[in-house]
Image 1 (cartoon, rainbow, N blue to C red):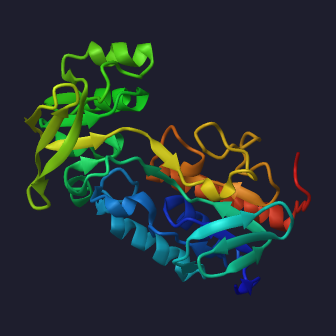
Image 2: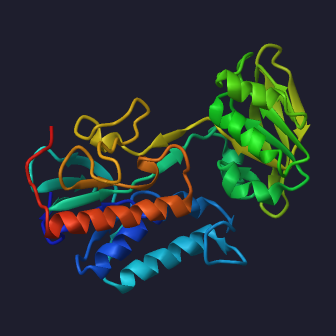
Image 3: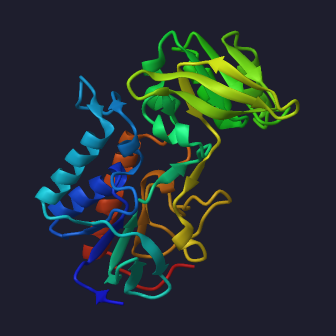
Length: 319
């Protein structure tokens, strides 16, 4: 396999964190390589209107926003390649990154590979992503004013999403496959005590009904005990069954928490447990998961990386 050492810094991921990191690195004349992965632009490319990103008072389409971010980074010299990271070797320095095309040898790496929302796996769900099917209440809740919404899930995230959505929706129905919620008691009590939230237990969504032109209109719900299939009126489906950080290639080398998110051992720093390796965006953030917060940490990672390369380079591995 071809080996390349032409880039001093490699950014893994091309969402808001990766593009922002690439912009700052490029303006510092570091000419980064951005490995886009299988989903160039990250999760925003599967959304429609984005109305909560600063600077766009009329809103902007998710794919358009990411295209503009990429163009801005490219303007200053960043190189984007649609390659997927398969493995890394961070045990020695220089660092090595192997993609589906070649192996890169570099001095520093910024991991901004994001996290993927866990999906139900339905063809109709995939077809209507961004057209009534969402994975982020704070991103899309505003579009569902006075509508009937279904939230799938039974954990803290689902209860938080359902509670948040009551600010906009006429009714929120939580569909959970078990007979009891998995959420913490305080989150359960908050949701159960909300008059706008109803619960359907021992059930799952089997099909999403609707069109891209008209959005979601109904869901087919299967009761797992009786096997009965029924149609539920709904204008929106929010899937809140968790996120999976895209950190599989780094397991065993970077310190990860029990959910797979990269740990940052030092406060106010994006450096990982390995010198020269920085992390930003949703690979480290399982709380906010917003485009604007990801972009902010992408800026931080680029500044940390530049400082490390120019002033504070240490090539041995931290304990």
